[in-house]
Amino acid sequence: MGLEILQSFSRTEWEAVFLSKAKPLLLTLDAAIAARILCEMSRPMASWGVLTAAFFRVVAQHVFEGYPLAFPPAVVAVYEAAGTGENLDTPLAECARCGYAHPRCFRTCVLCGGRVAVGARTARRARAARLN
Ligand SMILES: [Zn+2]
Picture (cartoon, rainbow, N blue to C red):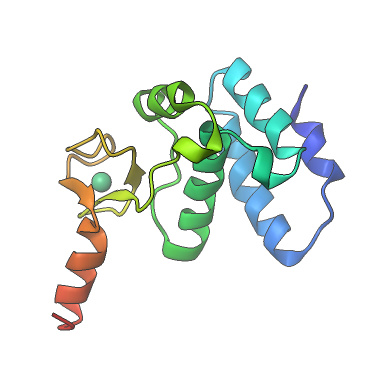
């Protein structure tokens, strides 16, 4: 299975933006992992596993928040082992510095070395905006 499956999605503006970010990120992944994500994304979202839901979240957070567009192997391995969607961590553990979402078992950002904790980025942003 290749990236052509993404072409079968209907094209709203959001989907076009999503695809423009998702495609290059998928190409950075192991081919079997990328194929699994593509296969799951062709099915209803409620049936996605943690890996695919996390991939979607990474792309969406990049588009809406400007967080890093990355899916590094250390993070992929944890999401892959988590299995089904009900095992997805919520709320997210996030990097205080760059905002990248991690599984809760991470204490240090795999991308920038910042502190990772639930609400870490949100708390930093609130302090910067003098909301607390
Ligand atoms: Zn970071």
